[in-house]
Length: 258
Image (tube, rainbow, N blue to C red; front, side, top):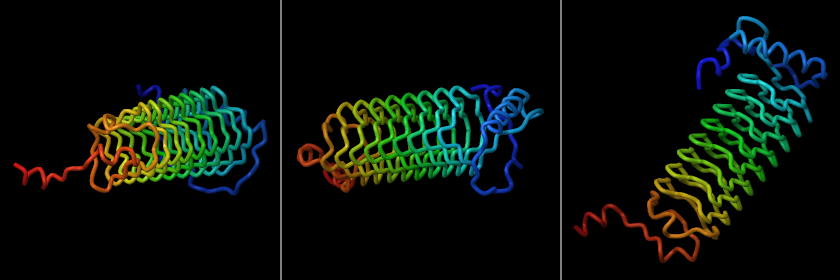
């Protein structure tokens, strides 16, 4: 990531909070034009795009350069954002239900408390994105990149995370019930207090992952070999078929044995 790829810094941006409003097509097009100038001139010309609390249902932003744009609390249900550059864009509390974000560049984007129910995020780049408390129910994150993303307390019930790259991701208290994590790379991820009951775990890589107090009751396809190098504790809950194979040994017991 070079400085040329980053959006200009504008600390005084959006001081007011307008009421939700439907944005006309011509206003959307003009906003995109000004934002493009703002990005290309590094903030010297044009204007940073602000669709804070805007109604943009089914809007078309496919392939658009929206680095640093503000969509906080916007309504973007069914919006098309495939291949869009959304580096450091703000989608906090935005409604993106059913939106198309395939292969979107969402590195370091703010998706705090965003509604992403049934959104398509296949192969999206979400490295270092903030998804705290995001609603990802039934979202499709097939082969997405979530390295070092913050998914603290995210609700990903039934989400498709097949082959997702989640290395070093922060997933404390995440809800992964019935999620598909087959083949996902969770090495060094923090899954402490995670709820992963009935999740599909076949082939998931868990070397170095923190699984303390996590609940994997009735998870499918999980093996003792997968969790051998993970960090567990006495309160990590395993599927019935693994309870006799994975035993937590307290450091105190190990010291006493020596």
